[in-house]
Length: 218
Image 1 (spheres, rainbow, N blue to C red):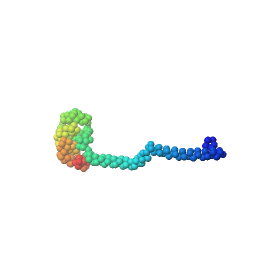
Image 2: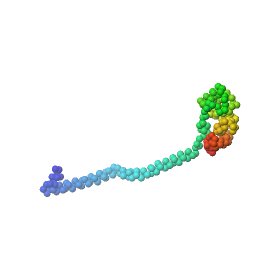
Image 3: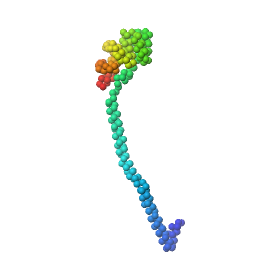
Image 4: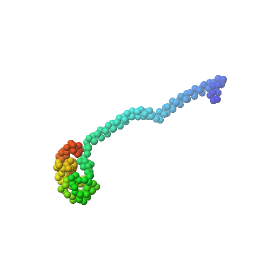
């Protein structure tokens, strides 16, 4: 039993009066401590409540800023993709590295020079291929065509164009290939108009018609 209980249970009037006074003081002290504690906390950190309110207000602005940035990025990407050419003539040129099948399209030449030329060409050793094809019978379309391609892949477009020009006949077995490579070679040699003129002769059903149309319309 606490001292407070003893005072309450006492029959002595003086004791009862003391118990009542002590109880009142206890209640007052408790309420006063609560008020004092609240006041102290407010003095120590007065911006806490305001800070929470500011954060709540700032959150929507932050999301709007992120959304706006995303929209700007999407628009910029779309603009860049539409401003950039799909494929350049140089990229087209190196996209088709031809391979000699080992069987001639119309030539029965089985001399060692031809075998060496085919080996060098398929190994993409363009300088060796140029030397080897130059040593073959250049009266054949095969030799002139692969010699022209070897110069073309070596980046020697002027030399390639000289050989391609001898293969422009519609009856050539390399007619479709020559239209494409000759057109590219002229463009890459700085003869843009002539190159486009050659590319424009590629018919819809012929090899690389769509790619030629893309270059013509850019």
